[in-house]
Image (tube, rainbow, N blue to C red):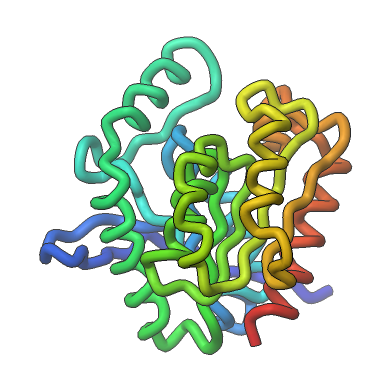
Length: 237
């Protein structure tokens, strides 16, 4: 009986200002593949995000999940309730988005130049990471951007005309953090763009992709993962 394995490790990335920070890397079974910059939620590169990195590695991608909060507090790894939730929100509020995009641009360049990356590089982000993924599509040099329940993306839709790469959005119809009005604003901002998709999942709440949360929705998660893989395969050749 054969056993398929992926290789995971923490690697070091050099930021544009010369400082270094850590990122979790997951390699596909064959050792290299197209690239994904996987962008965390507000809870850090925790067990779930590392699991998602490994999931995409099993799909054949070379995945790097950088520690977005490293400048304020390296190694944040939090759960989803109580004091952890409060701490996560504090880290998110302290994050300087332009600096974070600079760091993600450095990750994108490092991944593109790595011998373990043999194809285009896309960003995939969740919640806060979904907004950062959209901004990566604008400013970090990725070839495509995938944005899951990107609350706050409407604050940046004024730059919609600047977006030149294929982009996909995933929203839950029962998300109490993102009004349906914001979903429609996102649709409207990219009306007529065949390379931008907006998916809305019935009965899905915020964080529906996270199997470690009470809001996990297996059906929506599976549909979204399938849409993501199809989009990456068809839009990033």
